[in-house]
Image 1: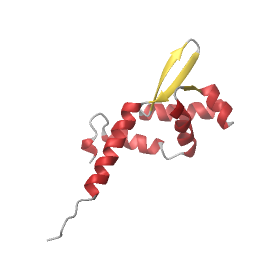
Image 2: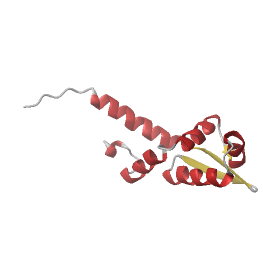
Image 3: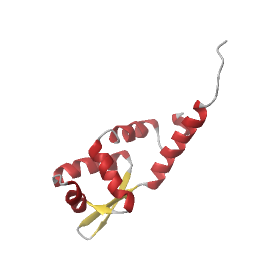
Image 4: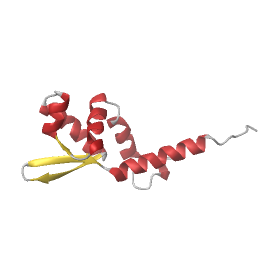
Length: 105
């Protein structure tokens, strides 16, 4: 099944799944559902320390789930829609393939 991911190798896919295993990172991703966001806004919403948010942002960025852009002294983070689409396609293939019935011989 992993070979069906065209742009994500198996190592990156494992990293993505590991990065999704933390509730703080899930919360950060949900905050990005409305578009770009900076760390200062994430800190305001979550009440967590900037250093803790930066730690989790690094994990999300390293896994490929988010990307960033710098504007002046501010860095804005957003979901990487291409990676999310690849994951969605893989999950869709997994669901579709699991519907197949096989008989033991």
